[in-house]
Length: 316
Image (cartoon, rainbow, N blue to C red):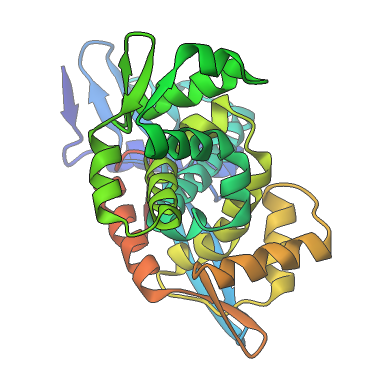
């Protein structure tokens, strides 16, 4: 049985504070300790209000301070006479902290991909990397059936079959004896679209929005992933600041190289330009800024995720 601390808890908290200050610095703190009646020990969970300083390049003197509250970093246990029995090592806490920050970035990336999937579906990398999907829907739009023997005659049949399985999960295609035919979603989006190019964009957008993590892990989409990462390097700080920022190319590229990998200036500028062309970003007077409608969707999605999984991280 576990009970909350009563009125005599200050000595417990003081002891924990002293131990945390001496061994962990001021970056890691604890939740309120509780007494475990079964084990006869005090327990407190480690957490961190991790600071983020965000800058708007249009107002360099302005600094936006936000904190990401990260929980579950470790635990400390004290005996009834307040001796420390066990505590997660500092190195493990730092490791957990780094892992949670990476999870936050991945979560931000998922939000950004979902909210801007229509725009990302229009970049050149999407059509190139997801060409098997384009080939599948092009064939089905022309003759409504793809035979298994036709797939086996292609250069990389297993790759096509992977995409067919993914599209089957999304109701874009249906498995039939000896082959594949269009599914319910295929028919619905085909009716909605006026021309094949628009239909293709709608299909790719849906796949990116619903299965980006799958295609990233299973399939080789590095060329397209770069567009997602550049988009993330603009929108992730804006999500933390809870406002659209004005940022220079150099700032976004610096974040990209810190978070992901090195990239040449010509390639990076091309990607930024294409994100502007498809409407994922805007550019004015040398600054890049996000699209209001897309960003509003991201804020809603972030709030929903924090409600579903509050134990991982929250903002203030």
